[in-house]
Image (cartoon, rainbow, N blue to C red; front, side):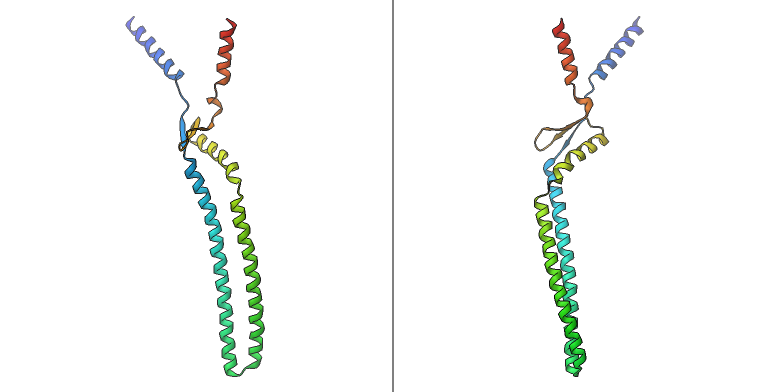
Length: 171
């Protein structure tokens, strides 16, 4: 008799434990996530700026090299080479100027795109959901401002509560 009583207590405890399972809850600091995204986007613009500057510096060095060659040719009295180098220098300066203007517009467009970027708002809920699912969370709360950001479909008990109320009201 004692064994049956112990077995019944164990079964009752197991039933109570499974009935009281809660959704695993996670937190995300949206302030940090937002700052990371902004920093990453700003870094991309800064990297573009540095790349353009590197290209401009290389073009400027090439022009300086041609100017030095022209000076040597002028010293040597090689007028044909001086004229050929003058033509090359003018073409390189025009290309430098055109390149600079085009890249200036590209940078301005990248800066404007950064200001008007709305992809974060589209991207964030999907990323939160995927991270939550991969970690087995049923509920995600913003740690810097406690609010529910995402919950799994099995976390919503609204229909269950309504059914219970319906049953109670039918009595």
